[in-house]
Amino acid sequence: MEYICTIMDRKTFLRNSVLGGTALATMGKAASAADPEKEVVGFNHLPTENARVMSNMVLHKAATRGHADHGWLNAHHTFSFANYYDPERMHFGVLRVLNDDAIAAGKGFGTHPHDNMEIITIPLAGTIAHKDSMGNSGTINAGEVQVMSAGTGITHSEFNHKADAELRLLQIWMFPRKRNVTPRYAQIGLDPKASENAFQQVLSPDPDDAGVWVHQDAWFNLGRFDGGKTVDYRVKRAGNGVYAFIIEGEATINGQALEQRDGLGVWDVENLDITTGKNGARILLMDVPMEV
Image (cartoon, rainbow, N blue to C red; front, side, top):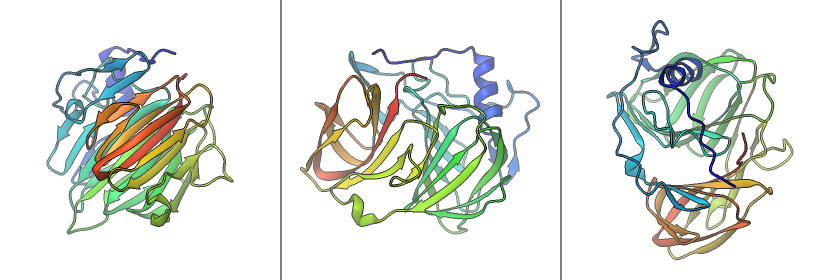
């Protein structure tokens, strides 16, 4: 199976990522959608290095991610997003966006639209204040997971709920298996003990399974491991690949050494062999279909 990479022209990319996906807001004021060529958010990134280390493996080092620092928002983009555009890094199978954001106290994203995307938010530190057009309003804390199926269309806002602390989060988008579903929202709290030296399932396609659920044949797992631990992860579905993101620490996956915030996508395998570094690691595994 080949790593799937869709190439789109610059104007289409800006329209889809900035206007159709999310609009940045500064000081609580949403960005205008009048001119997509002028609504770029700025970026800085190093050229992709060793993007494909094997025929079935793609490596994304942390330092090669797209980077935009707006003062109130410090964002790193594993895949092309807003004004960070790399045709070799559009997506990994159905995994379209993996943003690693730090948001200043009291700041955030004003009301903006989404449609036909499964959106998963994992706060790493702090609290998100969320409000959407489905009538949901509240907070999401570190140790919880939020999911939205945008479907036929939603609008929402996200702000740092705290006035004296930075908010850090991962936001992940996936293409759904079915378009134009009824929009939906859910969030759950995670048992921290369930991810101690083990992978805890936090997302699946089954509403009756552990974690939140999505309109896609995908499974996400989080684990926090001590140093020198070895664990085997079995791919959940034939034809799926797994994208591993090292949140903290160091690990070696299928022979590839990884450091903090590195990403590794692997496909055409049945399992991942994972060994953590001497200081341990916190790892997010995203088991996703490779065909969009």
